[in-house]
Length: 145
Image (cartoon, rainbow, N blue to C red; front, side, top):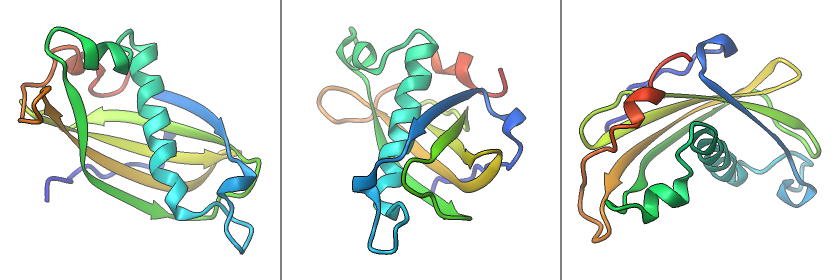
């Protein structure tokens, strides 16, 4: 287990915020967003963070080193359910950077109320799927902005 990041409930501790709106198709029979939708929300927020930082994920993947950030671990702590048409603030923080891995912490809020925290652990892999060295730009994304 590589996961060691403990995401905080303080939005000021995060470097980036992405807002998304939940869809009716993501609700379950109880009228709440199904837990299976959360990984896609986290991925959307990570990609938006990279794009805003000037490193669109498609360019990272198609660049000279062809680096992918494979998800090695995923943890979500559900606090309160998300519902259809919620505007969700997803706060994102990159941390735990090593030569071949990094962690991303998330705080999902609706109207300033914490709904979930999450952590993803990523490994850098090259075009052949073998471990690769992390791109140097990630060190600029670590910590509070």
